[in-house]
Image: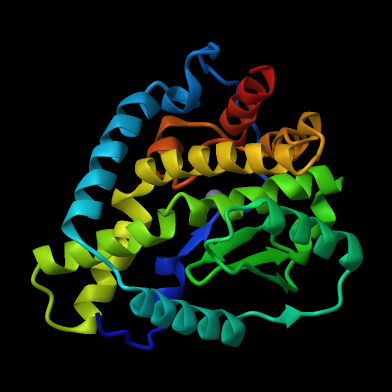
Amino acid sequence: MKIHKNIFWVPVFAILCIARLNSQVNQPSNQAQLSASDGLMNCGHILDGPAYYLKQLENKSLDNMLKITKEEKKQIGEVSYAQVHKKEKIITEFQNKRDILQTFANLKKAANGLVHFKLHVIDSEDINAFTMIGGHIYLTTGLLTYVDSMDELAFILGHEIGHHEKFHLERKIKKIMAASAFFGTAGIEDFTKIAVDLNNKFSAPFDQINEYEADAYGFELAKKTGYDINRFTDFFKRLEKTEKRSMLIKLNSTHPFSSDRRKCLENHIAN
Ligand SMILES: [Zn+2]
């Protein structure tokens, strides 16, 4: 696969993990109570159940249909990395640096070790974390200020590592490659348009399933590393206070609601 240097690759090949905070007023939830057996299949809305099964089917098809070589992944990773560094202000000095790097090192050591993970901090007030193929994990200073404990941060970093260990980024690229082949795109402009559409619209409910899966992985990894599982939900508890719930937002968002992610984590804690 030929790799082109185009700015649109950044959102396409990154998995953004925390929706930006907004000032909308929270709406009461009509969420059904979770039972212990719901697990990953229905951690949020009732529609997450069917979406989970469809996601498994999609994963299987993509894995059978397409292979991405190590070299291709490396090329995509290098292009994406260069673009983020061009666009964002990366800083090497930040508050609690020692503790943050130690937490990251602890988690890396406990992960499978198939990917070489690297942590970067972006100087931005946005509360965000994202990861890109090639093992690059980005946290904003806004997020670092927002977290209250290394336990919370360990869960967030574990979540990002989970996107790699569960092949989410790799399958995202395969999906875009498949769509490009299906639509018979000739040029990079068409290819990029499809890729952005896929990323922003059609993959939204499926991306929510990936978020739950990365949460489950992050939970287990941070727990295994010795962090306090009872603190992992703190982050979502604060976020959900500012989140507006509606079916329209749910269907168009790549992220589950914070309250659903929190309830799902509570389910993991209870089990
Ligand atoms: Zn995520």
